[in-house]
Image (cartoon, rainbow, N blue to C red; front, side):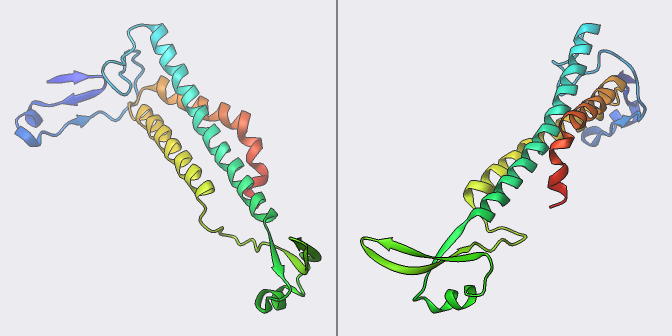
Length: 190
């Protein structure tokens, strides 16, 4: 029987050939030499273990920072949508009829090459779901991809069942929320 870091392989499972099953002990343990992400990242001293735990704390804070950044970018996107304006020329019947009674519009004179026209400036309609924009949706997708990767790395650290790694991830989540949680308070109510 071979045992390593709380994982156990029985001789019965080794005899199953290519479909060998590995049985894992699903209990937390406190070893300081648990590999993280690869066998080459195995702490060999208490200091290296502490450094690995500090790395996990920083990684969890980074995940919270990524979600705060995403919320900040969402607010900026909505603000930009609210500031968009359209100029409607008075001769155009379709929008002019619709926007003549709009409280968010104002009239003015547009001068182009010496020609003056009466126009109505109308705020862009802001819907709950904004139209797809390359400048908004590409950074959003990239940010969520990085956040998903960081989240999965944290999940893998917790799945080692090492108590120190688990508590480090929780400590990073706590510190990240403590430091950055207030920046997303107003975002949730929109």
